[in-house]
Length: 294
Image (cartoon, rainbow, N blue to C red):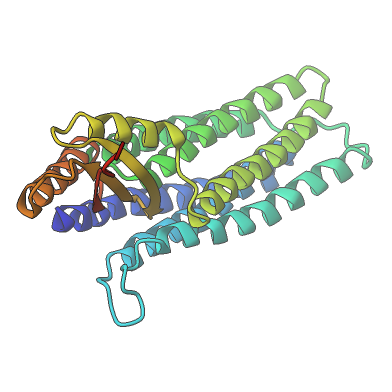
């Protein structure tokens, strides 16, 4: 089970590497064409992809650090390295997003009435097509490996494809004596970068502060109560170590149950949660049902 999770982290590296290569090539192309054609929107899109290189590098580093086994000062392992790397990437993305947004706003007051060359729009559409194929690859990989970070990368890939399409629409529109559409698109891209950075930060901080989905807790409880011999659940808590969930719970069994029977019940609870929900570790504490005296 543990070995399989480590192998999934290793497989997830492929998605991060493919994203890095794609973003490196596309951002270079967009920035070169944007400076040649004078397109603010394509420049913003290129800078957006530049931040995505950093984000993908953070995912790659996090995946590799997460594969380190537990040691003397990391007794629970290094699973949270991936989440920490994502948070660092969100800070960098926010800084670039604010810079793109500021540049776009300042461009509004420079009275640039020339529409960018139409090649900038075709460049955006080409890059959107490439990014869509990268999205499909990473989405399939994330589904196979059950990797939240790779799935987040795939979602970012799809978002970037739509940003490039929006960039092209803005540039096409600027050809009809509406050059301000290119600037407006650049501002929109800046806002989208900031939003993506905020979403990554919010999710990372939620996991690092031991936030956990209540719906999953409720599902766990139903499965636990279905185990023969479990009278009730006194307490249940869960937290995430990277992509791995750890569950701690206290169950109540019949006070007449022998020690071996109580142990068997706790083992069945562990197996149900691990097999049905892929829980990484389950810690079960068993207590006898209080004797009610008249």
